[in-house]
Every structure is written in structure tokens, then in C-alpha cells.
Image (cartoon, rainbow, N blue to C red; front, top):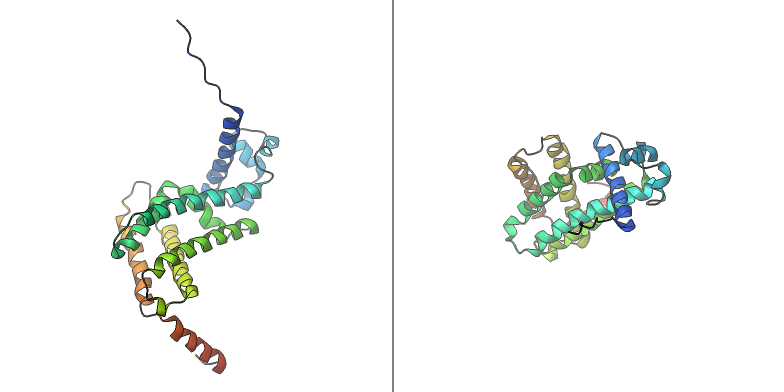
Length: 227
């Protein structure tokens, strides 16, 4: 009877696994209430169990690792939102489905969200700027969705982006203040209703907005110096 052959990990598998372990180690350290700029390379490699020198086989420096975390964190969220858009749903359910998707993302990727929320105001400029760029991309995608729900004559492209920004920042604030303090497994229905209500209030105010009218008002104000 022949012995079963042992499976050996390829070198490429080992490299990928170690690279992912380094990313996870940073997320773990941030979940312990540390900011990215306070995390040293030695702390990360100690968490993974490799030498500091081995780190450079995967990343040239800590900032590059941080930038990859930004990319992977947002790509996960974007993929979930694309799935929502791909399934036709009634207009009145768009906000609720978006809220549910975002909260599902945070529940499943809690440490990634902590990283995004914390480092969007963090001390590393390149990471802060990368997060801001990703938010702008999300705003553009949401603005395109909103353009199908509003009267084009009343809304400019820049105002649609402003509305998208308000909605996204509102969701982040709610989740950061409410969800992150809640135990895992706790029912999120109440939070979903709260977030949906807040976004609907923003949308309600948006219904009476007219870009052309408010542009004229802004121009008059700049000329007279009076509100």
C-alpha cells in the first residue's frame, strides 16, 4: 500500500500568506487602539513571527503596507455595493439596502473599517490622502446613482457629489459612534432604522434643492457681501 504523498506549499504560497499575515498584524494592532503612525515595523514582524529583515521581502516600507490596506479595505466595500447595484430594487428600498450593505461590511470587516475611520484623520499624509481619494471615488459612484433619482434640471454634478458626500459621511459617523460600541452578534435592526432615517432626512431636504437657484443666490451674496 503506497503512502499518501505530502503536499508541500510552494514558495509563492508562502510569500502570499506571509504578506497577508503582515496586513492582518497591522489591523490587529490598530484594533488595540493604536494609530498607524505609532506602529513600528518590529511590532508588526513580532506579531507575525518573522525577523524585521524578512519584512522587506514583502513591502519596501510601512507606508506601502498601509497603502495596500487602504486599497484592499475599499475594494471589499466597493464589491459589496456593486452587488447591490446589480440587483434591481424599488427606489424606496435603495437607501435601506445601502445601509444594510454598509453595516454588513462593517460587521464582517470590523478591523478594516477601524483602520479607514481612524486613519482618515491620521498622521501619515500619504495614507490619509489615499483614503480621501477612495472616498471621492465612492462619492462619484453614489452621485451617479443619485442622478437617476433626482430631476436633472434641478441638480448640478457638483451638487450631486455634495449630497453623496453628506450621505457617506453621515453613515460613517453613525457606524463609528453606534455600531463599533455594540457587542458582536447584537441585533442591528434598530441601528439600521436610525441610519435609514438620517439618510432619508438628508434626501428629504435634497428634494427642495435647485442648483441653478442656489447658484444665483450664492452669486448675489458674493456681490453684496450679505446673506
